[in-house]
Length: 154
Image: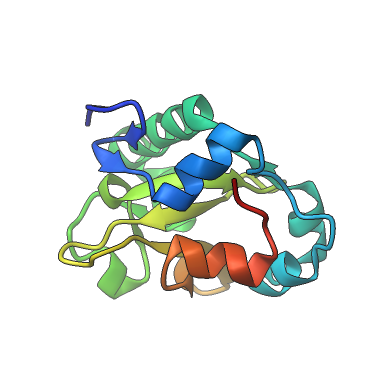
């Protein structure tokens, strides 16, 4: 895993709209959290979530890798995997994910770079009582996510 450019995390290029928003300082919680609440399915998560800067995205991605590789007893209930078929099983392939927003409960909203997809989708975890956490797509692209959430861009 490496960052090969100024706007890359783990080798993944961030979407232009996110880069523009980070540059302009507009990557933050919207005043009206109705859209974000609907996406996250939790008002408290929407109200208290932490919108990550570039350094924190990189740090959190390192943390996901550490858990997935070295703490399998924690990775399984968190829905983390390093397997390429992770998404087919509702898990998060940490090698294809970039955390962009953290929640109060320690989970993330992530960009997900699916092999062959032209743009990353946006995933968030939902709890499944039988297996722990399962990751679901909350938007087909970052641009769709920010529109639905009501987040201003640069």
